[in-house]
Length: 257
Image (tube, rainbow, N blue to C red):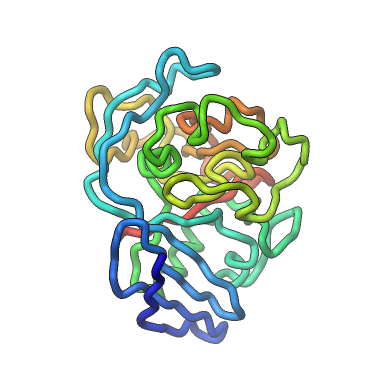
């Protein structure tokens, strides 16, 4: 995969630098250098259609996973990995995670904290960074599949870090195989905040859905090291108060192309 680095920008006294791809092609990686050898990798996801939710025969499915067709009309970038502790510290200057490790996903960050991170990033990075919508997250996770997990109908400890792996903690990003889009840890490790409020899906075929206008809790996706295999399914949905800070929720960035 060819990586083309372009403009470089400074980030105040912390000396954080950003390098952007000059050409954009589906599957291309965008590299954002955060200084001191800390980098953020984003993968370009093509526009397309997919079946969001789970079919009625899927094991452990929930009533709020009603299957429906979704069209993603524009390509977008999404993090190759979950945001790490070293990336968070490079931008914010602290590390809120209880279990420390530079390459571990950052945790103990609320939905609101993630927006503070994104706001600071966007101030110097030509904008566009945000949390993914639920539809964007699930489309990226499934990567053209329609099974419970991108690798099939079942999950084992060799596939992801979930409760059944019995590790009891997050692991470094990139330990497990990527999906067809080149994304790691879409199942397990830590839950990932999404932009949407949590609620029932709208009916019918949807185009670039963004969830309900208002609800009580925000969505998170992917499951975690703490939770059972059913929670790690591609279509599974989790709801949490946007101020929640816990050791099993982190996030993955998206960037508008």
